[in-house]
Length: 158
Image (spheres, rainbow, N blue to C red):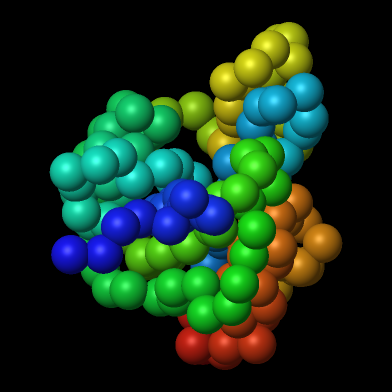
């Protein structure tokens, strides 16, 4: 058995790509670590759960309703240092999802639509796939995924 390396660890994040019938993708605007960020909905994998279990849990926590995973979209294929933690490598997994029931959580038309910037503040909004830009997202892997969505836009809107 090999000993774990003291030099570094991994953090695994799992995200859901929810695309509406109107060809819009759901974005999450959040305030964490004293900054505004726009990302795809999802969060951190906990020890003892699989990536799909994580995403189902995150959907219940963030949306308050269950989501169904339709297929795998992307897993990080390059080295990415975790932004907020020292000595951590980030691995992100993205799945396409759909809601099991009619959307029942609030979705805003403006970014960062929450009362105060307190840690954990969150709001959701739709962004048309036709108007999605890499710069709409805050983090490198999300930007990469936005680029893949843009590159393959005709698949989603076609």
